[in-house]
Length: 389
Image (tube, rainbow, N blue to C red; front, side):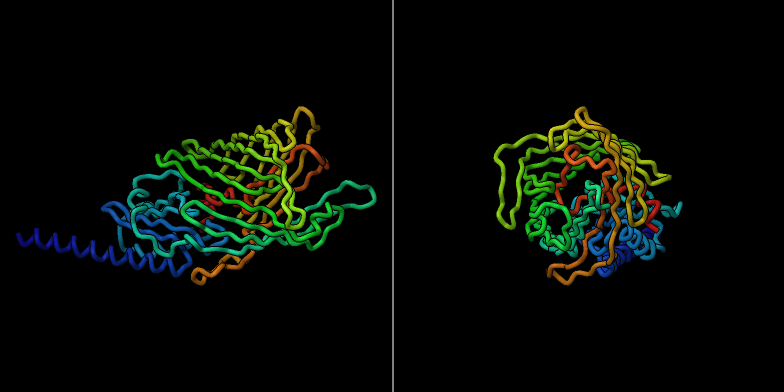
């Protein structure tokens, strides 16, 4: 009887110590700049959900989260699970196996998300806002007596998280230098103004999506739906987009728009090659001017930059090739002060270069100022496992 009582007391004591460790972990994660922190424990694992709010790149935040959790639970022979969220939507699950001492990242969700999502949230990002400055450089080479014509703009965007998955963004474009581009780009005018809702399927099927309404890039406005699905193994994926849109233009702050909407779409098959951190994409697309064609992309991802080559061919236009890149810009850590808007630079800056100087066809649009090839790879599990050091 005494042995049974002693065993029960030891078990209760160990549970109490682990509960105290959980509270300490949440406090340390909050101090390290993470947001939307939730934690729970079962007999098999400790699970923590968080977002990398203060880190420019999620992979760098997740590397810090791994260090904190390994250090805090070093004396506990228990599995650790970290679920990283973006706008409170779960993106990836990292699992630490104490027997092997290794982490494994996947987009799959399991019952650990159901366990932790009901816990109270610490350092909520809901209602927090940012003022991000996007440097934008555009060049073209269309005249004989000049090598390049260029346009340089600083485009601040006010972004606020309204509720889980929802973001409002309002962007202004301030011209710095305009050589050879439309005169409307020489005036201060709004850029993209959007309201977007990100989501993930509730059945843990690796289906992600986003619905965006508002004013897009390339002088278009409307409603767009995007969706992604990752096959088992997660190297192969498909994505699709369909949008109902119409033409528009900001003449200063005067919004001019057309009332005749049209449908645009694209669908793609993707393959990610982990040894080289390279993604290959073959996309069929109906471009903005109505031309339908194929686009091939090869994008190599590095620690803080992404570089890609592309080729396009449609029935009514010649073959078009080019390259593009995105580079993450400092600061790489950004502190918040309560609910005051955080002022910083954008996640990345970059540009694309059309080597065939195609002026009319193969035109595309972006639904949000933050959309770029660097950020689209931010929650790639292969990239996280190879770079979260």
